[in-house]
Image 1 (cartoon, helix red, strand yellow):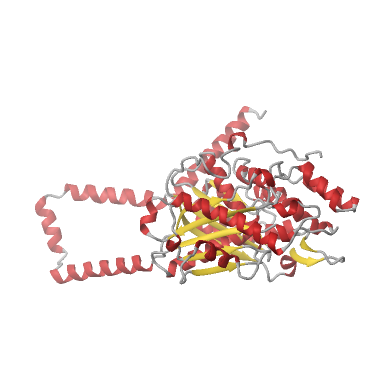
Image 2 (image 1 turned 60 degrees about the vertical axis):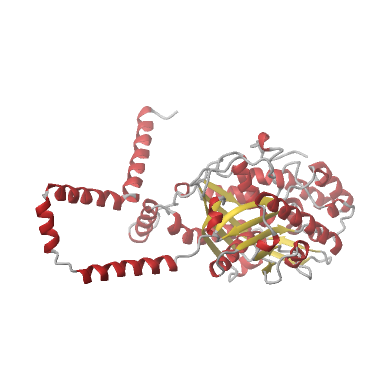
Length: 494
């Protein structure tokens, strides 16, 4: 227990920091209010005759007044016309796998032993699964339940149709969206890129318009969902009165690794099936029912560095088995990418008090003492909610430490990893659905989505909640939200 003096000192320091933040963030207001009040008092002391004399002393004629009014109207018009169109997130839907696709730990390890005759590989996967943070309810596609798995083109297409069509159907039910109302379609899936494309598959299924602007992104990793959002935003800036459908998924069927290289066995243990469909719009009338408004998207690409480029790499092993290798340097590279991303994001979202503290500490390290620790801005002052890509327990731990977040701030990410596993680019939407299912999303709240992906990329999106979200009754968490959050031990003995 700290002594009374230490405790009082820490409390006083806390209030000093709060006072500093208020002073800096409201500096202009605190400066202008006294000036305006003094001006109002001075004018109030003048009589009607003195006010008329003051007006006449300005010597303004009708021409001056009209020119001034025209200038104000012209500047205002240019400002309004040059502003970017607001992009609204009307609603979104996440695919919820059926119970028949569940893969409890015992089932996963039993299949692993039957498929592999390498005891070292089996023991390695057991250790990974024990420490993964995944729960007993994660799901794999039907083809992966076969012994051995059936990674055929037909099975891969079947999984794609199952997860994508289910998510879109759910979104259509929520929003009343009609196929003719979709102007832009963006689909991202990294490792399954058939011909015709997945976007063409959606167009064929829902009989979308022939002049739809469609895009199919592949090979861009787990952060591709935010790249799709960024692309849709750019399209909505140049096409007024439009709706954009964004679909994010990863198809697991063709990517099961059957070899014995440890760095390529990790995805088998972490990745699970999932998909999300998101409806964006720049139509003003959609603002009334939209959930969020897109505020910022910041993208960071470290592909110029060879280590970053190869840290998540698709290749064949010595036996000819194809898979995704994950480098031991992955977390260090992810941390470097995050630093670059928040360096750009910080000035856009942080209050002035935090920016000044960061600047003064940076100058102090350069000019006074290089041993000073760099100041880590408090992003909790800029956001109420954090959606960190549920790529694995180590990813969440690293970001929680680097951003100095509380367990509650990373709760959505940890619980999503536990319930659904790593669903790649769609995991951010399962996390947002968790926050909504808990009834925590209020009007004016700000959400920071952070995604990482091969290349190596770190992408961020900032959303502002437009209305208090009622607890949904038909989302991916509706049958289990009452038992979350759960305690996740460091090691689950299998």
